[in-house]
Image 1 (cartoon, rainbow, N blue to C red):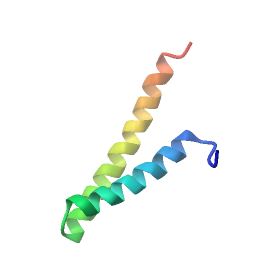
Image 2: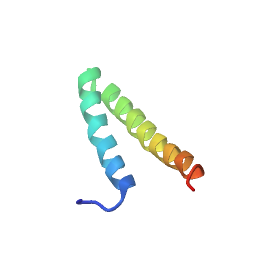
Image 3: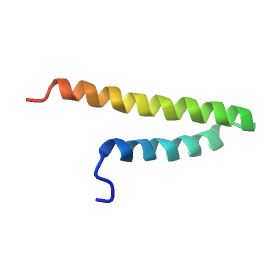
Image 4: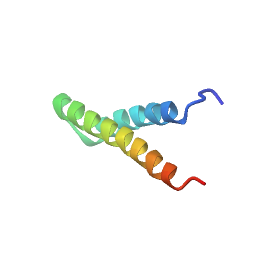
Length: 59
């Protein structure tokens, strides 16, 4: 295992997926940047919220 933190792994994954999807789905540079930022922050915040939600059900 290269990284010990799952959160860092998830942020790196969100970064690369956001780059690819921004280039595939948008045509202009400005739209790509907006879409990249939206996806990146959505995935990162979603991962944090999901991790917090799972923490509530730990024994």
